[in-house]
Length: 462
Image (cartoon, rainbow, N blue to C red; front, side, top):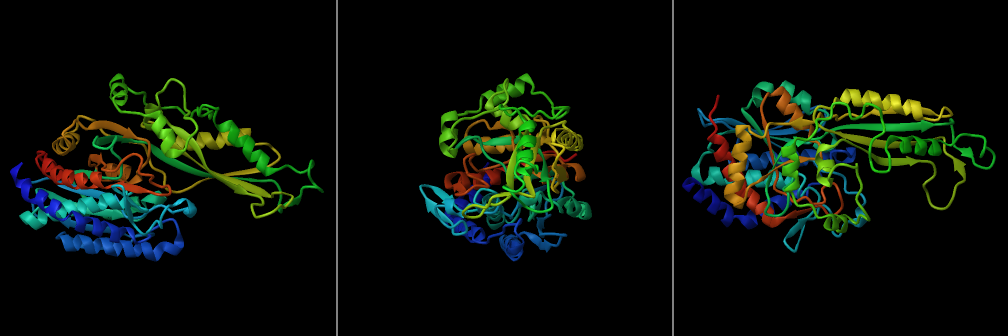
């Protein structure tokens, strides 16, 4: 497409500048889960609004919510063309454990074609490649091929607790024909992917209490119940050794994979040896009867996320703790009912918990429903064409094991189909120490974003 020659040349000529822009963004420690970082989160929002205004978007604004703000901007000068809503999130995960990082997480470092730092892949790098593609369009042609609205959330990493209310309050302003989200990954380097389904998420805190204070393990050992032991017994009852969840009703409504989906999944390379080497795993595990890819993308899971309580300081302290606690989460798949699963978990934990302790199950905010879109939708086709032009190969149609609550909210409240297309690699260490971005994939992603807007613009508005 000849009209893209100038924008592509602009991107090629500004590779170094684009990388510097990303590094400046990455230096802001916008950790949404830590109250002491609230000022940094707000600083990142202001920085992003400035970038949007600089590149030529209009109405750039930092919009307040009950928590961290949302950044908005738009360009609405293409009458008769579709309107797309581009979503990203500028908040990042905590960096613990800090001692496992090979360089400071908010001081971007390049090595061997990779850029290391918190947020490089999730999701600041993907926000940056989009603003740079938009800049290339506006700088070289003076216009975009379609109408575009851009939002960046500051609470995705804590479950988007205020995003639904934000969308409800701004529904008219956000009304769009299509939504585009770049917060997912490719299949592998040089192998682009479009994600058509996400798992949902529910999250719980389980607290087990046995006494009103810590007890002397000599004076009361063998008499008083130990909540740590009780917690261990409860957790053992949740899953069998293969990972199959034992909660009655947990798998109700799970949509089975079609034969075609299984064939598509089988095309995706899966290197068990490399997975184990990359993440330091001794072995993989999971439900019998499903491949690792099927288990990761299309089966529900339950995972313990943390356990604490009792004495954890240096030396020894011979106590029976008064209480202990754990956090656990469930990834759900299309057609599961999150409320029904939550109720089933509560009932089951009450049944299996020892009667000698008090158990409290608290569901934490940030529930995200499973999401799926038809693979034959014109928006999916537009994404396939754009990726095909840049990468020279057929993009894979995949599911993702993670959850993006904003996808369900936008699809449901705005009644707009969503396209999920990511430009980072699966081994980017998102949420982990040494998060990284493959720079070649970043530069190709900028080019693909150029083509994406043109392909969406060609969809007939109904």
